[in-house]
Length: 223
Image (cartoon, rainbow, N blue to C red; front, side):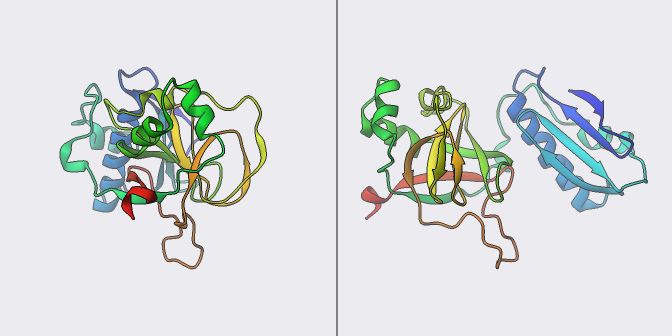
């Protein structure tokens, strides 16, 4: 882990050089959020994870107590490439209609049948690595030894679409995701869900949060 200053009131924890960067990022985020809740990180406003970094943001003008951050992380083993079993949350089930416009091409590119693509996607536990792009959009990474390794090896589409429907379930560049609203997008569309990922009328508008676990289910087999 590298500590990089991000102005007077923020610190960027960079795990890109660690053996398991995404897992280390999730661990650091979880531990620091717990320390905030316990009151052991006074003055910290937020802890924001990304693909391989965590931004620790303090109150403006108050400076940053870096020692308290190191103290909170001192017992975390960042070399271990798995999430502790006590940190595994109950999965959020997202039912999917696997009728996506790119499903056949994804199967062809992955040298799989359509059924195998769907099976790889639904038999994988996914964890929200970070949020971004649009409100409620979670970047989901497969758990270790996942059946979705072949799917996540796909890059983005060569050409983005100007409009992707809300609820589209997609994969690209190591991630899976659900589009919370209509927007441009360059990911491979496997299907769609009727579940709302972003609801401004709710006390907690985003269904997904960093560290949450997701399991996609096939509507046809659940019926």
